[in-house]
Image 1 (tube, rainbow, N blue to C red):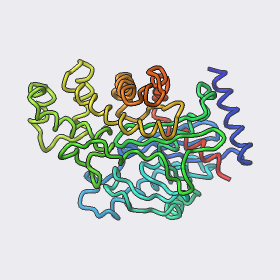
Image 2 (cartoon, rainbow, N blue to C red; image 1 turned 180 degrees about the horizontal axis):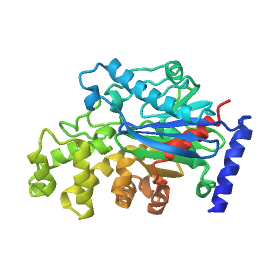
Image 3 (cartoon, rainbow, N blue to C red; image 1 turned 90 degrees about the vertical axis):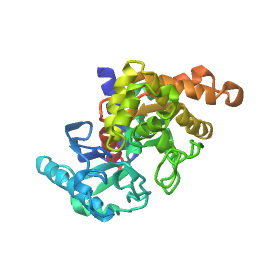
Image 4 (tube, rainbow, N blue to C red; image 1 turned 45 degrees about the horizontal axis):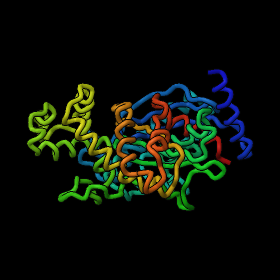
Amino acid sequence: MIKKGIIFFLFIITMFLNNKTTAKNAIVIDAGATTIRIGYWDGTSVRNVTRHDTPHYQTPECKGLSLQGCQDLWLTKLTQLVTEYKQHHPQATHVALAFPGPVDKNGNILGSANLWNATSCPIPRQRISAAFDLPVVIEVDVTMSLYRYVGEPSLQSINRIALLTISSGVAIKMYVRGYGVNCDAENRGGSICYLKVDRSTPPLPYPRVPGCVNACCSGNAMLALARRAALSQECASSTLTSLLFSQPDTITPAEFNHSFIEALKTENHFALKILTESTRYLADALTSYIIAAAPERIILMGGFAEAVGARYRIMLISALQEHCSQELYNYSPQDIETMIDFGIIDDMNGLIGAGIRVNMEQ
């Protein structure tokens, strides 16, 4: 444990030297679509972490509000939290924000389907910085989390590290040693969430892109997958289908997933069928990504994948082994099994990554 801490500390120091900067104290925020996590980065670690519900377009406080109203409420809540942390940590010089949606090269927020049900609704970085009254660094949440793993001792020999998050949405980003995050000059690259993988008629619903990865593979997708599967006679007697039929219009994805996870623990046939279908859809999209980007390691994270646990990794590996065959792409079953692994399950990925990222600012 001591050795691991020393290696991580040396990594942080190296990052400072390479970027000709010094350690920064910062308020770090992982602004998830469901939960806001906020803490204080003291230059080497995060402390004083608290969690808060995220106001988004489906929550009661946003009911009846316009898109602008939802965004204003979201920013107001973040500003209140930052103000409280500034009072307790006046030495903070920056805010680092991990955001659940696309962010451009200048740190401007472009939109968020999960927060505001809109993929195009920009918020300039300057507006957020003015609200916080501190310089702010903004990155896509999966990119922020990725920075945590760049310094992990167990990954020091890995040159191409990708982070795959399976939560209310699906996203992947990759870090290449000697280069940085694998994206273009506009901060684009690695987005697989809108790739169409369900070609049935009709495909699973999703705004603008029915049948995309988010529609089939995210935590929010399980309810729609279950409703479609429940129509088959094979699954008609499942306890989960009884739940669907008893609450056809009122059950939420989060409520269904609670029962779904419990059903997986009992080897429920219907739950296993849904998860198998979902991981096969994900493997369809990931195969193209693997062939094009050649990651050496893909780290799994995200609330849904972590809730399912080890079974998720096993089923995804099995699906990928079918897609990325050795005959076609020269990936052996063992190559795929080694490639896919879980990250650190402590809800700290985005916060620690944000602290490391803010220390890279000039």
